[in-house]
Length: 409
Image (cartoon, rainbow, N blue to C red; front, top):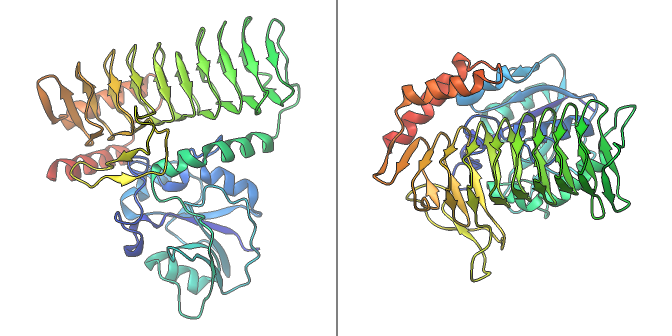
């Protein structure tokens, strides 16, 4: 098989916002860099296909920030006569398809390309336009492969996370700490560098648990599988991490959390409930912040993904909050079912915010206004510096462009 190119097709006309919109997840990253289980989609694809990723292809507006997070070519074809082009929205590539050169697997319902084995010339033509050359044979499949909205990733999370955890390759010298209570016969893996303190309960009865490198689980915490605690993350005293939760690197988690994805570098360090949610990077939830993930009617959750947009059906009974990168919440914030909070929002109101908050909104009891972009950049730089991570010029430019788009509407 040819080397892989993972592409983000958001920019193609046939996959525009009316059809595909993973915001706020994709405001500051490519769709394949979303944590869609224990792993990001890109990490999962890399593990499943040899000989690995040769390049990635992304919309022009995120080209510079994507280049900072990868060591492969971005929007440039590497050397090679042919390439295996894979859609970065294929979060769960459980089914393998053997494609011959000049063939493409296409979703029958949407017509979107899932994967294609293409010559160099056909790869270049396709990746630049999103249109398959007429010479390529289209193999249509009736199944749904590609996610279109952020809540679809949460809907797939139980299956994807469970599969990721079972496929995890443990390091030598896995530990079973003393004074830890283990429930169930399911697998659990604690990295040798992780620290699990006395009084911790691991419930692996219904799914595996992985506690990754240099993670810390404080006394009295309970973790219910399937669950993933990422590198350098901390599960704090008496926290309850319920099933189907994936916590990325460098997070702090406390209170009650379940069926939720933490992209990474995000803190929920105090009491409060968070369920069936997705949080981007550099989010901070103030003490007592709590969300609802179920309507009082027990009905299907409808959401508005963008201010002024139409309500969309999710097909889900349980759906909490989808929160963009760098959003901040004051103490005691209450988030209603099906809330979508835009990138860079600052929520400091004593009443629940609207279920759809635009990016870079500064919301208080006096009303909503745009966050001053220079102040936002200053805060973001300060927060990231605490983890010794630089706010790069490319990321700042992307944030400023997002701000201009948000405030121009």
